[in-house]
Image 1 (tube, rainbow, N blue to C red):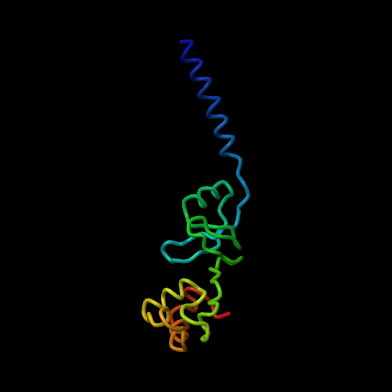
Image 2: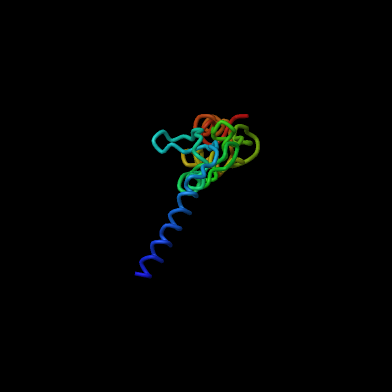
Length: 138
């Protein structure tokens, strides 16, 4: 009987502590949440208690930050910030170009650009396959 009373009191204390922890709500916080169905980040404002879950289990980030899983840079509106194309949109610098993803995309279809010279055809290909995908023309 004594053990039952002690166990009941411990259970009541545990539940009382848990309910007070759950009752304490944190303010909503803006985060960029990755929509797996849409393939983009969107601004949502979940309860502050769920922020850690979002950051741990999704490729989410604070607006203007980097996502937790892929390290994708996002602006304040949750849009992906693409790097500049560097010299990939210019000729006269030899083989290859500065933006690695663009260089790889162009090189996969036109090895000449990587082996010999980044000429005007390579620039045209970079404009077609890289701008707004791997980099921006800014």
